[in-house]
Length: 192
Image (cartoon, rainbow, N blue to C red; front, side, top):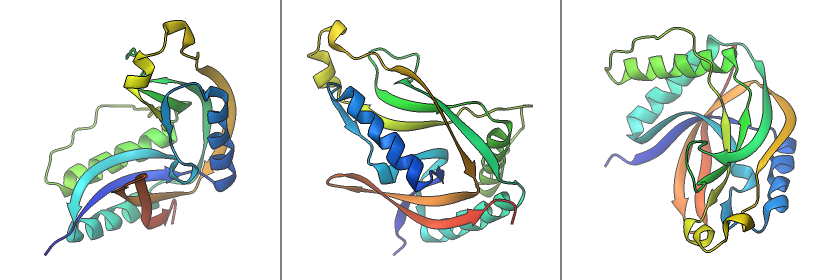
């Protein structure tokens, strides 16, 4: 029998940065939300969904090929806000990053390689700068609706944190009783 795996491609954060970002939730304890555990904080480059064992092997190979074509780069995280920006009431708390040509090129390269792998026809559409975000919390809508609008905390905070992106990971997400549990299936170094 062929097992299915819920797979995504991610940039994981350095441990010290994960702990620092996780501590921000203390500022908004009145918000009815399920906060992301520190070990789960990441930037998703591509979500692939359910794939079989052979496809996982192929995706790991593609990740290694794509990683070779890109050098390590710095990524700036600059703002905590409600996301998505166009939705009210808010659904999530995000930590956003500055647009990055290097990150955009990496994400676009993955998209192209994965479309090719799946037999699709990918057409590039010019320059693309990917705006990264990290989900810090998912807001519990029932609890939010019980709050008066003036009780909902304002979340729009500028921060300035950067880190070096040196690896990308093929990750598996497994739903557990306490929320999703992520496992690194393959970690590939950029530029190697």
